[in-house]
Length: 242
Ligand code: PGA
Image (cartoon, protein in one colour):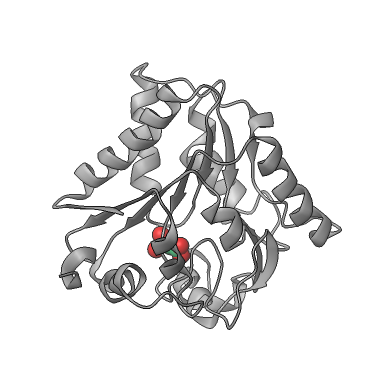
Protein backbone atom coordinates (compact mmCIF):
# COMPACT_ATOMS: atom_id res chain seq x y z
CA UNK A 1 0.00 0.00 0.00
CA UNK A 2 1.34 3.37 -1.00
CA UNK A 3 -0.12 6.34 0.95
CA UNK A 4 0.65 9.89 -0.18
CA UNK A 5 -0.60 13.03 1.58
CA UNK A 6 -1.00 16.43 -0.09
CA UNK A 7 -1.19 19.87 1.46
CA UNK A 8 -3.35 21.28 -1.31
CA UNK A 9 -6.41 20.10 -3.19
CA UNK A 10 -4.88 21.17 -6.52
CA UNK A 11 -1.77 19.05 -5.97
CA UNK A 12 -3.87 16.06 -4.95
CA UNK A 13 -6.12 16.39 -8.01
CA UNK A 14 -3.09 16.78 -10.27
CA UNK A 15 -1.43 13.68 -8.80
CA UNK A 16 -4.61 11.59 -9.19
CA UNK A 17 -5.10 12.83 -12.77
CA UNK A 18 -1.46 12.01 -13.56
CA UNK A 19 -1.89 8.45 -12.30
CA UNK A 20 -4.99 7.95 -14.46
CA UNK A 21 -3.41 9.57 -17.52
CA UNK A 22 -0.17 7.63 -16.96
CA UNK A 23 -2.17 4.40 -16.92
CA UNK A 24 -3.81 5.31 -20.24
CA UNK A 25 -0.49 6.31 -21.80
CA UNK A 26 1.21 3.06 -20.80
CA UNK A 27 -1.63 0.57 -21.35
CA UNK A 28 -2.92 0.13 -24.88
CA UNK A 29 -6.72 0.02 -24.67
CA UNK A 30 -6.75 0.78 -20.93
CA UNK A 31 -9.84 -0.12 -18.92
CA UNK A 32 -10.49 2.50 -16.25
CA UNK A 33 -12.98 2.19 -13.38
CA UNK A 34 -14.56 5.54 -12.55
CA UNK A 35 -16.24 6.98 -9.46
CA UNK A 36 -18.72 9.78 -8.82
CA UNK A 37 -19.45 11.97 -5.76
CA UNK A 38 -17.75 15.12 -4.57
CA UNK A 39 -14.21 13.70 -4.37
CA UNK A 40 -13.40 13.17 -8.06
CA UNK A 41 -14.83 16.45 -9.41
CA UNK A 42 -11.46 18.27 -9.26
CA UNK A 43 -9.67 15.22 -10.66
CA UNK A 44 -11.95 15.14 -13.70
CA UNK A 45 -11.45 18.90 -14.16
CA UNK A 46 -7.69 18.33 -14.24
CA UNK A 47 -8.06 15.47 -16.74
CA UNK A 48 -10.22 17.66 -19.00
CA UNK A 49 -7.54 20.41 -18.81
CA UNK A 50 -4.85 17.91 -19.76
CA UNK A 51 -6.99 16.64 -22.64
CA UNK A 52 -7.57 20.20 -23.90
CA UNK A 53 -3.81 20.76 -23.82
CA UNK A 54 -3.39 17.74 -26.13
CA UNK A 55 -1.68 15.53 -23.54
CA UNK A 56 -3.97 12.54 -23.86
CA UNK A 57 -6.56 10.83 -26.03
CA UNK A 58 -9.31 8.52 -24.76
CA UNK A 59 -10.13 7.01 -28.16
CA UNK A 60 -9.00 3.52 -27.16
CA UNK A 61 -10.05 3.69 -23.50
CA UNK A 62 -12.97 1.77 -21.99
CA UNK A 63 -14.54 2.91 -18.72
CA UNK A 64 -16.80 1.27 -16.16
CA UNK A 65 -18.46 3.36 -13.47
CA UNK A 66 -18.87 1.93 -10.01
CA UNK A 67 -22.57 2.56 -9.56
CA UNK A 68 -25.83 4.24 -10.53
CA UNK A 69 -29.05 5.04 -8.68
CA UNK A 70 -32.06 2.80 -9.29
CA UNK A 71 -35.15 4.35 -10.89
CA UNK A 72 -33.70 7.84 -11.29
CA UNK A 73 -34.35 9.01 -14.87
CA UNK A 74 -31.08 8.86 -16.81
CA UNK A 75 -31.32 12.59 -17.68
CA UNK A 76 -32.00 13.63 -14.07
CA UNK A 77 -29.22 16.10 -13.15
CA UNK A 78 -28.17 13.88 -10.22
CA UNK A 79 -28.01 10.60 -12.12
CA UNK A 80 -24.45 9.38 -12.31
CA UNK A 81 -24.78 9.33 -16.10
CA UNK A 82 -25.51 13.10 -16.00
CA UNK A 83 -22.64 13.61 -13.55
CA UNK A 84 -20.18 11.75 -15.79
CA UNK A 85 -21.38 13.57 -18.91
CA UNK A 86 -21.04 17.01 -17.38
CA UNK A 87 -17.82 16.41 -15.44
CA UNK A 88 -15.93 14.31 -17.98
CA UNK A 89 -17.49 12.55 -20.96
CA UNK A 90 -18.86 15.66 -22.73
CA UNK A 91 -15.37 17.19 -22.78
CA UNK A 92 -13.12 14.36 -23.99
CA UNK A 93 -12.86 12.07 -27.04
CA UNK A 94 -13.99 8.89 -25.26
CA UNK A 95 -16.42 7.11 -27.64
CA UNK A 96 -19.87 6.79 -26.04
CA UNK A 97 -19.96 3.06 -26.85
CA UNK A 98 -16.87 2.57 -24.64
CA UNK A 99 -18.17 4.15 -21.42
CA UNK A 100 -20.28 1.93 -19.23
CA UNK A 101 -22.53 2.90 -16.33
CA UNK A 102 -25.02 0.43 -14.85
CA UNK A 103 -28.56 1.08 -16.13
CA UNK A 104 -30.52 1.91 -12.99
CA UNK A 105 -33.75 1.85 -15.01
CA UNK A 106 -33.26 -1.63 -16.48
CA UNK A 107 -36.47 -3.67 -16.62
CA UNK A 108 -34.56 -6.66 -15.21
CA UNK A 109 -31.99 -5.29 -12.71
CA UNK A 110 -30.52 -8.74 -11.92
CA UNK A 111 -29.86 -9.32 -15.60
CA UNK A 112 -28.37 -5.81 -15.91
CA UNK A 113 -25.95 -6.64 -13.04
CA UNK A 114 -24.99 -9.95 -14.64
CA UNK A 115 -24.38 -8.26 -17.99
CA UNK A 116 -22.31 -5.53 -16.33
CA UNK A 117 -19.93 -8.04 -14.72
CA UNK A 118 -19.76 -9.94 -17.99
CA UNK A 119 -18.82 -6.76 -19.88
CA UNK A 120 -16.02 -6.08 -17.36
CA UNK A 121 -14.74 -9.66 -17.77
CA UNK A 122 -14.88 -9.35 -21.56
CA UNK A 123 -12.88 -6.11 -21.40
CA UNK A 124 -10.06 -8.07 -19.74
CA UNK A 125 -10.62 -6.54 -16.25
CA UNK A 126 -10.15 -3.03 -14.95
CA UNK A 127 -6.54 -1.80 -15.14
CA UNK A 128 -7.07 1.09 -12.71
CA UNK A 129 -10.09 1.65 -10.46
CA UNK A 130 -10.67 5.11 -8.99
CA UNK A 131 -12.47 5.01 -5.62
CA UNK A 132 -13.81 7.46 -3.08
CA UNK A 133 -14.72 6.51 0.48
CA UNK A 134 -18.06 6.88 2.24
CA UNK A 135 -18.26 8.11 5.83
CA UNK A 136 -19.48 4.65 6.80
CA UNK A 137 -16.62 2.90 5.00
CA UNK A 138 -18.51 2.06 1.83
CA UNK A 139 -16.73 1.71 -1.50
CA UNK A 140 -18.93 2.03 -4.56
CA UNK A 141 -22.25 1.55 -2.79
CA UNK A 142 -21.12 -1.54 -0.87
CA UNK A 143 -22.55 -0.62 2.52
CA UNK A 144 -21.40 -2.13 5.85
CA UNK A 145 -23.11 -5.51 6.31
CA UNK A 146 -22.66 -8.95 7.86
CA UNK A 147 -21.74 -10.25 4.44
CA UNK A 148 -20.71 -8.46 1.27
CA UNK A 149 -21.78 -9.39 -2.24
CA UNK A 150 -19.03 -10.21 -4.71
CA UNK A 151 -20.50 -9.14 -8.03
CA UNK A 152 -22.53 -6.20 -9.31
CA UNK A 153 -25.88 -6.09 -7.51
CA UNK A 154 -28.80 -3.96 -6.38
CA UNK A 155 -28.27 -2.49 -2.93
CA UNK A 156 -30.47 -0.68 -0.40
CA UNK A 157 -28.58 2.51 0.49
CA UNK A 158 -27.66 2.97 4.15
CA UNK A 159 -29.20 5.84 6.11
CA UNK A 160 -25.74 7.51 6.36
CA UNK A 161 -25.46 7.38 2.58
CA UNK A 162 -28.92 8.90 2.07
CA UNK A 163 -27.95 11.66 4.51
CA UNK A 164 -24.55 12.27 2.86
CA UNK A 165 -26.09 12.41 -0.63
CA UNK A 166 -29.07 14.58 0.39
CA UNK A 167 -26.84 17.60 -0.35
CA UNK A 168 -27.20 16.89 -4.06
CA UNK A 169 -31.03 16.74 -3.96
CA UNK A 170 -33.81 19.12 -2.83
CA UNK A 171 -34.45 16.96 0.23
CA UNK A 172 -33.40 13.60 1.69
CA UNK A 173 -36.73 12.17 0.55
CA UNK A 174 -35.67 12.73 -3.05
CA UNK A 175 -32.50 10.61 -2.73
CA UNK A 176 -33.10 7.26 -4.43
CA UNK A 177 -33.19 4.45 -1.87
CA UNK A 178 -31.46 1.88 -4.04
CA UNK A 179 -28.53 1.69 -6.42
CA UNK A 180 -26.75 -0.79 -8.65
CA UNK A 181 -23.15 -1.12 -7.56
CA UNK A 182 -20.12 -3.14 -8.54
CA UNK A 183 -19.52 -5.64 -5.76
CA UNK A 184 -16.38 -5.70 -3.64
CA UNK A 185 -15.21 -8.74 -5.60
CA UNK A 186 -15.55 -6.79 -8.85
CA UNK A 187 -13.68 -3.85 -7.32
CA UNK A 188 -10.88 -5.96 -5.84
CA UNK A 189 -10.28 -7.66 -9.21
CA UNK A 190 -8.99 -4.35 -10.60
CA UNK A 191 -5.26 -4.61 -11.29
CA UNK A 192 -4.58 -1.32 -9.52
CA UNK A 193 -6.78 0.72 -7.17
CA UNK A 194 -6.52 4.47 -6.61
CA UNK A 195 -8.37 5.49 -3.43
CA UNK A 196 -8.79 9.25 -2.99
CA UNK A 197 -10.04 10.68 0.30
CA UNK A 198 -10.48 14.33 1.24
CA UNK A 199 -11.59 16.19 4.36
CA UNK A 200 -11.37 16.02 8.15
CA UNK A 201 -14.79 14.35 8.25
CA UNK A 202 -13.17 11.26 6.66
CA UNK A 203 -10.14 11.14 9.03
CA UNK A 204 -11.65 8.48 11.33
CA UNK A 205 -12.96 6.23 8.59
CA UNK A 206 -9.76 6.29 6.50
CA UNK A 207 -7.78 5.32 9.61
CA UNK A 208 -10.17 2.46 10.22
CA UNK A 209 -10.11 1.41 6.56
CA UNK A 210 -6.32 1.35 6.24
CA UNK A 211 -5.22 0.28 9.71
CA UNK A 212 -8.28 -1.27 11.38
CA UNK A 213 -9.50 -4.86 11.39
CA UNK A 214 -10.47 -6.19 7.98
CA UNK A 215 -14.22 -6.51 8.34
CA UNK A 216 -17.39 -6.36 6.25
CA UNK A 217 -18.56 -3.68 8.73
CA UNK A 218 -16.05 -1.40 6.97
CA UNK A 219 -16.03 -2.54 3.33
CA UNK A 220 -13.05 -0.29 2.51
CA UNK A 221 -10.93 -2.29 4.98
CA UNK A 222 -10.93 -5.11 2.39
CA UNK A 223 -8.70 -2.86 0.28
CA UNK A 224 -5.89 -3.78 2.69
CA UNK A 225 -5.81 -7.15 0.92
CA UNK A 226 -5.22 -5.61 -2.52
CA UNK A 227 -1.65 -5.98 -3.84
CA UNK A 228 -1.58 -2.69 -5.72
CA UNK A 229 -3.34 0.02 -3.73
CA UNK A 230 -2.43 3.71 -3.98
CA UNK A 231 -4.06 6.05 -1.46
CA UNK A 232 -4.05 9.81 -2.02
CA UNK A 233 -5.17 11.91 0.96
CA UNK A 234 -5.38 15.58 1.75
CA UNK A 235 -3.79 16.57 5.03
CA UNK A 236 -7.20 16.89 6.72
CA UNK A 237 -8.17 13.30 5.86
CA UNK A 238 -4.71 12.09 6.90
CA UNK A 239 -5.00 13.92 10.25
CA UNK A 240 -5.52 10.80 12.38
CA UNK A 241 -3.05 8.47 10.68
CA UNK A 242 0.08 7.75 12.71
P1 PGA B 1 -17.97 11.83 -1.76
O1 PGA B 1 -18.51 10.33 -1.72
O2 PGA B 1 -16.84 11.84 -2.73
O3 PGA B 1 -19.14 12.64 -2.25
O4 PGA B 1 -17.55 12.18 -0.37
C1 PGA B 1 -17.61 9.29 -1.62
C2 PGA B 1 -18.36 7.99 -1.54
O5 PGA B 1 -19.48 7.97 -0.98
O6 PGA B 1 -17.84 6.98 -2.02
